[in-house]
Length: 140
Image 1 (cartoon, rainbow, N blue to C red):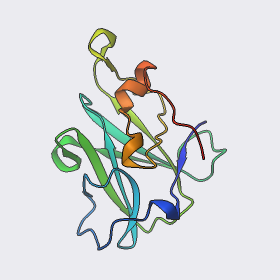
Image 2 (cartoon, rainbow, N blue to C red):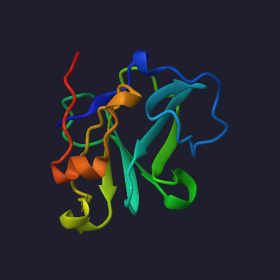
Image 3 (cartoon, rainbow, N blue to C red):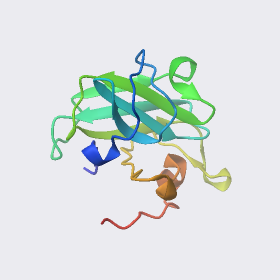
Image 4 (cartoon, helix red, strand yellow):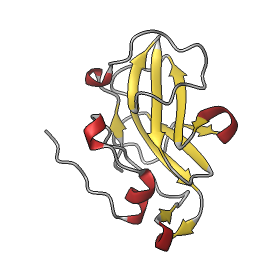
């Protein structure tokens, strides 16, 4: 299982978030206001799920948080604030939507998608990752 881990390096947004809807910026996982704000670009998705794992070797998520278009989407960005999370939390996503590779939409709600949003210069769409077209940035 491949998942991302909330790190202290990603803590760049000051201030608190008023509710669990979260904010669309900054992208990635950001420590803020007693929890973590998650934001991911998923153009064309109908539903995105945030998966929280107990540890990096866990086969199944301990918690699945569905993000709704009404409450957790701004334009093509899906976001949620999860209170009481700390650095080291292992997370990933699942994205549901159309499967149309000719249009670049390869959503598969069964596939666990790891993000690599370490900086704005390394953005990638989870739809492109699902289609196998995204390049994985090198680890430093």
